[in-house]
Image 1: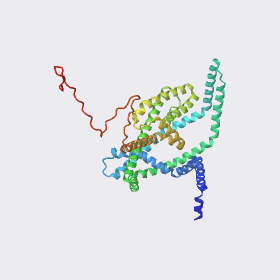
Image 2 (image 1 turned 90 degrees about the vertical axis):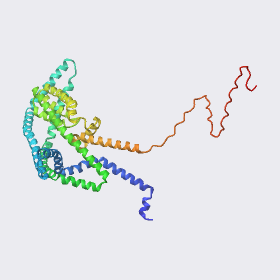
Image 3 (image 1 turned 30 degrees about the horizontal axis):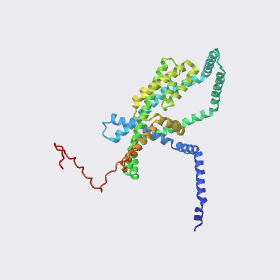
Image 4 (image 1 turned 45 degrees about the horizontal axis):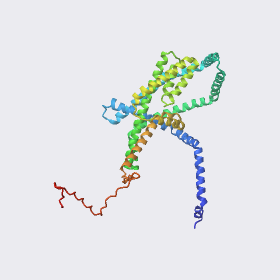
Length: 423
């Protein structure tokens, strides 16, 4: 017998392997976030231009298809029609983004500079407002010491945060420049992906058809098609919804004569893309900016936010989405929390389509399981005998072997004279 077989057959060997495996699993789970973040962080840094190119090509492809089917549909050569549609589609997308940036960025910079330059005055206004509230509460014999402590604590926190995050602001500026370079490379790659879309898609389909069985391949293609429909529909309608909500917010703020209309409306539109928590974040940021200028305007802004979210929930969303995604609020909330923890802002933005995909996967699985269960023949269960009530004797059933009982003789008929027939 070999020495290693003697060791593996010992009782303590299996317990040792199980204990070591449990320790390794515990260490992996304890440092999962560190390993996960470091691995995917390195992968994201290396593949950022490629990912940006793929996402850009995926988002621009519907515009290219529209150009190909409606603008250049009279061109006979497919390759020329595709190239012209691709170039024009990319130009349209770039022009729209450029116009938005040219019109919004100067106003955002101007609003930010004004906000920073007048920060001392805004803080003095907020302090005066808190002092007024404190005096009014003291008139009703209410202790206002908590307001003084809260005021000092808030302003100390703001000053400490600015000092502590000065280096982070510089690093963020550097990362923005790096991201701009990755974006330019990604746009160039997107042109190549759009130009070679047919070859890339056909090559991927041929590879999958060789690797997978026909039934599994068809299910995978159907799954990819449904995911594509959900993503495109969600992205398009979400952008339209954010644009409508931001425009309505700007109109209402202009009617009420508020400050920083463009800055706050852009914040409201962008945060509205985040499900569930986005409107709350936008309301907090906008209310904080306005409370430094005019606390009454901050109150008006919160009322506007409540009205807009009510209109968005009961009018805009049903009109755009039409309930086609069919995802419950519990699923959305769960995916927003988990996606935000794992993938930060991107996970929160894609929470609803991921929840919709998970929902139809679960529905299909449940339907297939129900069909399989119906196809399985069920065993025949004999009927349960009903017990006789207590106190009654059951009537004996006639046996098949017993002779037939004698028929009963008819009663003798009586003569009119009073004698029977036998007499």
